[in-house]
Amino acid sequence: MTAKHSTIITCAITGSIHTPSMSPYLPVKEEEIVSQALAAAEAGAAVLHLHVRNPNTGEPSSDPKLFERVAKTISARTDAILSITTGGSAKMTVEERLRAPARIQPELCSLNLGTMNFALHQMADKPREWKHDWEKPFLTSTKEGFFKNTFGDMEQIIKNLGERYGTRFEFEAYDVGHLYSLAHLIDRGIVTGKVFVQFVMGILGGIGADHNSLVVMKDTAIRLLGDNIEWSVLPGGRAQMPLCAMAAIMGGNIRVGLEDNLWLGPGQLAETNAQQVEKITHILSELHIPVASPDEARQRLCLRGTS
Image 1 (cartoon, helix red, strand yellow):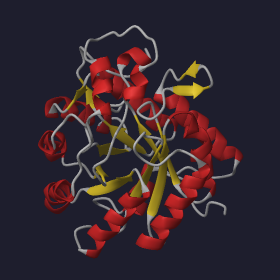
Image 2 (tube, one colour):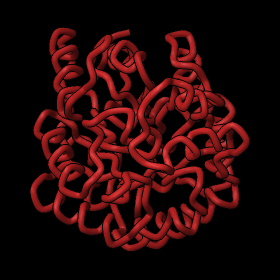
Image 3 (tube, one colour):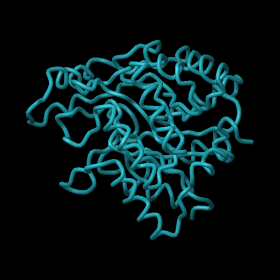
Protein backbone atom coordinates (compact mmCIF):
# COMPACT_ATOMS: atom_id res chain seq x y z
CA MET A 1 0.00 0.00 0.00
CA THR A 2 1.41 3.38 -0.93
CA ALA A 3 0.86 6.59 1.00
CA LYS A 4 -2.19 8.53 -0.21
CA HIS A 5 -1.28 11.81 1.42
CA SER A 6 1.59 13.59 3.05
CA THR A 7 3.18 12.30 6.24
CA ILE A 8 2.93 14.22 9.49
CA ILE A 9 6.29 14.13 11.27
CA THR A 10 6.33 14.52 15.04
CA CYS A 11 9.64 15.12 16.81
CA ALA A 12 9.90 14.29 20.52
CA ILE A 13 12.68 16.50 21.78
CA THR A 14 13.84 15.14 25.15
CA GLY A 15 11.26 12.95 26.92
CA SER A 16 11.77 11.29 30.28
CA ILE A 17 13.22 7.89 29.37
CA HIS A 18 16.87 8.60 28.59
CA THR A 19 19.20 10.11 31.15
CA PRO A 20 22.03 12.62 30.63
CA SER A 21 24.74 9.98 31.07
CA MET A 22 23.50 8.13 27.98
CA SER A 23 24.29 10.93 25.54
CA PRO A 24 25.99 14.32 25.82
CA TYR A 25 23.55 15.56 23.16
CA LEU A 26 20.32 14.96 25.09
CA PRO A 27 18.75 18.41 25.57
CA VAL A 28 18.38 19.23 29.26
CA LYS A 29 18.52 22.98 29.78
CA GLU A 30 15.69 25.25 28.70
CA GLU A 31 17.68 26.87 25.91
CA GLU A 32 18.81 23.45 24.60
CA ILE A 33 15.23 22.18 24.38
CA VAL A 34 14.12 25.37 22.64
CA SER A 35 16.96 25.45 20.10
CA GLN A 36 16.63 21.75 19.25
CA ALA A 37 12.85 22.06 18.88
CA LEU A 38 13.18 25.02 16.52
CA ALA A 39 15.79 23.22 14.42
CA ALA A 40 13.58 20.12 14.22
CA ALA A 41 10.67 22.25 13.01
CA GLU A 42 12.91 23.89 10.42
CA ALA A 43 13.96 20.42 9.25
CA GLY A 44 10.34 19.38 8.63
CA ALA A 45 8.66 18.36 11.89
CA ALA A 46 5.05 19.61 11.93
CA VAL A 47 4.53 18.56 15.57
CA LEU A 48 6.95 19.09 18.47
CA HIS A 49 6.32 16.83 21.47
CA LEU A 50 7.58 18.50 24.64
CA HIS A 51 8.82 17.42 28.04
CA VAL A 52 11.10 19.50 30.26
CA ARG A 53 13.88 18.61 32.69
CA ASN A 54 15.50 20.00 35.78
CA PRO A 55 18.19 22.19 34.18
CA ASN A 56 20.76 21.28 36.85
CA THR A 57 20.33 17.51 36.98
CA GLY A 58 18.45 16.53 33.83
CA GLU A 59 15.75 14.80 35.87
CA PRO A 60 12.24 14.83 34.32
CA SER A 61 10.26 17.80 35.61
CA SER A 62 6.59 18.83 35.80
CA ASP A 63 7.40 22.48 36.59
CA PRO A 64 4.61 24.46 34.87
CA LYS A 65 6.64 27.69 34.78
CA LEU A 66 9.46 25.94 32.92
CA PHE A 67 7.00 24.33 30.50
CA GLU A 68 5.34 27.69 29.91
CA ARG A 69 8.60 29.49 29.17
CA VAL A 70 9.72 26.79 26.76
CA ALA A 71 6.35 26.64 24.99
CA LYS A 72 6.03 30.42 24.66
CA THR A 73 9.55 30.81 23.29
CA ILE A 74 9.07 28.06 20.72
CA SER A 75 5.59 29.26 19.68
CA ALA A 76 6.91 32.77 19.10
CA ARG A 77 9.41 31.49 16.54
CA THR A 78 7.66 28.67 14.68
CA ASP A 79 4.16 27.69 13.59
CA ALA A 80 4.82 24.02 14.39
CA ILE A 81 2.21 22.38 16.60
CA LEU A 82 3.22 21.95 20.24
CA SER A 83 2.13 18.65 21.80
CA ILE A 84 2.54 18.87 25.57
CA THR A 85 2.99 15.63 27.48
CA THR A 86 0.41 14.47 30.00
CA GLY A 87 2.57 11.40 30.62
CA GLY A 88 5.50 13.16 32.28
CA SER A 89 7.20 10.18 33.87
CA ALA A 90 6.01 7.10 35.72
CA LYS A 91 7.12 8.68 39.00
CA MET A 92 4.65 11.59 38.66
CA THR A 93 1.02 11.58 39.77
CA VAL A 94 -1.64 12.48 37.22
CA GLU A 95 -2.15 15.76 39.08
CA GLU A 96 1.53 16.62 38.64
CA ARG A 97 1.36 15.63 35.00
CA LEU A 98 -1.59 17.95 34.42
CA ARG A 99 -0.06 21.06 35.99
CA ALA A 100 1.72 22.31 32.88
CA PRO A 101 -0.94 21.44 30.27
CA ALA A 102 -3.64 23.11 32.38
CA ARG A 103 -1.51 26.25 32.48
CA ILE A 104 -0.54 26.27 28.80
CA GLN A 105 -3.90 25.05 27.44
CA PRO A 106 -2.30 23.64 24.28
CA GLU A 107 -4.05 22.63 21.08
CA LEU A 108 -2.60 19.12 21.35
CA CYS A 109 -1.51 16.85 24.21
CA SER A 110 -0.41 13.24 24.48
CA LEU A 111 -2.62 10.84 26.43
CA ASN A 112 -1.49 7.38 27.51
CA LEU A 113 -4.10 4.66 27.04
CA GLY A 114 -3.36 2.26 29.87
CA THR A 115 -1.54 1.27 33.04
CA MET A 116 1.45 -0.88 32.16
CA ASN A 117 4.86 -2.18 33.05
CA PHE A 118 7.10 0.56 31.64
CA ALA A 119 10.42 -1.15 32.16
CA LEU A 120 13.66 0.78 31.77
CA HIS A 121 15.75 -1.19 34.29
CA GLN A 122 17.68 -3.05 31.59
CA MET A 123 19.13 0.31 30.48
CA ALA A 124 20.95 0.54 33.81
CA ASP A 125 22.89 -2.67 33.14
CA LYS A 126 25.25 -1.15 30.59
CA PRO A 127 28.51 0.01 32.22
CA ARG A 128 28.75 3.79 32.21
CA GLU A 129 29.87 6.69 34.35
CA TRP A 130 26.75 8.22 35.86
CA LYS A 131 26.69 12.03 35.90
CA HIS A 132 23.96 12.31 38.52
CA ASP A 133 22.93 10.25 41.55
CA TRP A 134 19.27 9.99 40.47
CA GLU A 135 19.85 8.30 37.12
CA LYS A 136 20.56 4.66 37.94
CA PRO A 137 17.91 4.38 40.73
CA PHE A 138 15.38 6.03 38.39
CA LEU A 139 15.96 3.28 35.83
CA THR A 140 16.26 0.31 38.19
CA SER A 141 13.08 1.26 40.09
CA THR A 142 11.02 0.47 36.99
CA LYS A 143 11.65 -3.26 37.55
CA GLU A 144 9.20 -3.18 40.48
CA GLY A 145 7.08 -0.19 39.46
CA PHE A 146 4.48 0.52 36.82
CA PHE A 147 3.12 3.44 34.79
CA LYS A 148 -0.35 4.31 36.10
CA ASN A 149 -2.95 5.36 33.53
CA THR A 150 -6.35 4.12 34.69
CA PHE A 151 -9.66 4.80 32.97
CA GLY A 152 -10.27 7.34 35.73
CA ASP A 153 -6.98 9.06 34.92
CA MET A 154 -7.81 9.14 31.22
CA GLU A 155 -11.26 10.59 31.85
CA GLN A 156 -9.75 13.21 34.20
CA ILE A 157 -7.28 14.34 31.54
CA ILE A 158 -9.94 14.48 28.82
CA LYS A 159 -12.31 16.44 31.06
CA ASN A 160 -9.70 18.88 32.35
CA LEU A 161 -8.11 19.62 28.99
CA GLY A 162 -10.42 18.49 26.21
CA GLU A 163 -13.76 19.67 27.56
CA ARG A 164 -12.41 22.78 29.25
CA TYR A 165 -9.93 24.12 26.69
CA GLY A 166 -10.69 22.30 23.45
CA THR A 167 -7.38 20.44 23.54
CA ARG A 168 -7.17 17.48 21.17
CA PHE A 169 -5.17 14.35 21.97
CA GLU A 170 -2.50 12.14 20.52
CA PHE A 171 -3.62 8.84 22.06
CA GLU A 172 -0.57 6.71 22.84
CA ALA A 173 -1.19 2.97 22.45
CA TYR A 174 1.61 0.77 23.79
CA ASP A 175 -0.14 -2.49 23.00
CA VAL A 176 -3.16 -3.90 21.17
CA GLY A 177 -5.31 -3.82 24.30
CA HIS A 178 -4.89 -0.05 24.48
CA LEU A 179 -6.71 0.24 21.15
CA TYR A 180 -9.67 -1.56 22.69
CA SER A 181 -9.55 0.89 25.59
CA LEU A 182 -9.69 3.79 23.14
CA ALA A 183 -12.63 2.16 21.35
CA HIS A 184 -14.39 1.87 24.72
CA LEU A 185 -13.87 5.58 25.43
CA ILE A 186 -15.29 6.39 22.01
CA ASP A 187 -18.30 4.09 22.51
CA ARG A 188 -19.08 5.85 25.80
CA GLY A 189 -18.87 9.29 24.17
CA ILE A 190 -15.89 10.34 26.29
CA VAL A 191 -13.68 10.67 23.21
CA THR A 192 -15.34 12.44 20.31
CA GLY A 193 -14.27 13.71 16.90
CA LYS A 194 -11.46 12.53 14.69
CA VAL A 195 -8.93 10.30 16.43
CA PHE A 196 -5.15 10.65 16.30
CA VAL A 197 -3.52 7.48 17.65
CA GLN A 198 0.19 6.87 18.14
CA PHE A 199 1.54 3.29 18.17
CA VAL A 200 4.34 3.28 20.76
CA MET A 201 6.54 0.30 19.97
CA GLY A 202 9.62 -1.09 21.67
CA ILE A 203 9.04 -0.29 25.37
CA LEU A 204 9.61 -3.38 27.53
CA GLY A 205 6.12 -4.11 28.84
CA GLY A 206 4.41 -3.11 25.59
CA ILE A 207 4.32 -4.37 22.03
CA GLY A 208 7.60 -5.01 20.27
CA ALA A 209 9.11 -2.81 17.55
CA ASP A 210 8.87 -5.06 14.50
CA HIS A 211 7.04 -4.99 11.19
CA ASN A 212 4.53 -7.72 12.07
CA SER A 213 3.45 -5.83 15.19
CA LEU A 214 3.04 -2.63 13.19
CA VAL A 215 0.70 -4.38 10.77
CA VAL A 216 -1.31 -5.78 13.70
CA MET A 217 -1.61 -2.39 15.37
CA LYS A 218 -2.64 -0.63 12.16
CA ASP A 219 -5.18 -3.28 11.14
CA THR A 220 -6.65 -3.42 14.66
CA ALA A 221 -6.94 0.36 14.86
CA ILE A 222 -8.76 0.55 11.54
CA ARG A 223 -11.07 -2.32 12.49
CA LEU A 224 -11.98 -0.83 15.88
CA LEU A 225 -11.86 2.90 15.16
CA GLY A 226 -12.70 3.12 11.47
CA ASP A 227 -10.61 4.32 8.57
CA ASN A 228 -11.21 8.05 9.20
CA ILE A 229 -8.41 8.26 11.73
CA GLU A 230 -4.88 9.56 11.75
CA TRP A 231 -2.42 6.96 12.94
CA SER A 232 1.27 7.29 13.59
CA VAL A 233 4.13 5.08 14.70
CA LEU A 234 6.73 5.75 17.39
CA PRO A 235 9.40 3.04 17.24
CA GLY A 236 11.98 3.00 20.01
CA GLY A 237 15.68 2.47 19.50
CA ARG A 238 17.21 0.94 16.37
CA ALA A 239 13.78 0.22 14.83
CA GLN A 240 13.05 3.93 14.53
CA MET A 241 13.96 4.60 10.91
CA PRO A 242 12.92 1.27 9.34
CA LEU A 243 9.48 1.24 10.97
CA CYS A 244 8.92 4.95 10.30
CA ALA A 245 9.62 4.34 6.61
CA MET A 246 7.30 1.34 6.63
CA ALA A 247 4.52 3.32 8.32
CA ALA A 248 4.79 6.13 5.79
CA ILE A 249 4.55 3.65 2.92
CA MET A 250 1.44 2.18 4.60
CA GLY A 251 -0.18 5.63 4.66
CA GLY A 252 0.57 6.50 8.29
CA ASN A 253 2.42 9.25 10.12
CA ILE A 254 5.66 9.03 12.07
CA ARG A 255 7.53 10.20 15.14
CA VAL A 256 11.27 10.57 15.62
CA GLY A 257 13.37 12.35 18.23
CA LEU A 258 15.83 11.84 21.05
CA GLU A 259 13.03 10.92 23.45
CA ASP A 260 12.65 7.65 21.53
CA ASN A 261 16.11 6.95 20.14
CA LEU A 262 19.51 8.48 20.88
CA TRP A 263 21.16 7.19 17.72
CA LEU A 264 21.38 8.32 14.11
CA GLY A 265 22.87 5.06 12.88
CA PRO A 266 24.89 2.07 14.16
CA GLY A 267 27.47 3.37 16.62
CA GLN A 268 26.63 7.01 15.85
CA LEU A 269 24.84 9.14 18.42
CA ALA A 270 22.49 11.74 17.02
CA GLU A 271 23.88 15.16 17.90
CA THR A 272 20.52 16.89 17.41
CA ASN A 273 16.86 16.04 16.97
CA ALA A 274 17.02 17.80 13.61
CA GLN A 275 19.44 15.17 12.30
CA GLN A 276 16.80 12.49 12.78
CA VAL A 277 14.14 14.66 11.13
CA GLU A 278 16.48 15.33 8.21
CA LYS A 279 17.23 11.64 7.84
CA ILE A 280 13.59 10.57 7.71
CA THR A 281 12.62 13.42 5.38
CA HIS A 282 15.39 12.29 3.01
CA ILE A 283 14.05 8.73 3.14
CA LEU A 284 10.52 10.00 2.46
CA SER A 285 11.75 12.09 -0.48
CA GLU A 286 13.37 9.00 -1.98
CA LEU A 287 10.01 7.24 -1.63
CA HIS A 288 8.21 10.21 -3.22
CA ILE A 289 6.16 10.77 -0.06
CA PRO A 290 5.57 14.46 0.76
CA VAL A 291 5.91 15.87 4.27
CA ALA A 292 2.94 17.65 5.86
CA SER A 293 3.23 21.30 6.85
CA PRO A 294 2.01 22.46 10.28
CA ASP A 295 -1.08 24.00 8.66
CA GLU A 296 -1.95 20.77 6.90
CA ALA A 297 -1.38 18.79 10.11
CA ARG A 298 -3.71 21.15 12.01
CA GLN A 299 -6.43 20.58 9.46
CA ARG A 300 -6.07 16.82 9.46
CA LEU A 301 -5.90 16.57 13.25
CA CYS A 302 -8.88 18.94 13.63
CA LEU A 303 -7.06 21.20 16.06
CA ARG A 304 -8.39 24.41 17.53
CA GLY A 305 -9.03 27.18 15.02
CA THR A 306 -9.40 24.81 12.06
CA SER A 307 -12.52 23.40 10.48
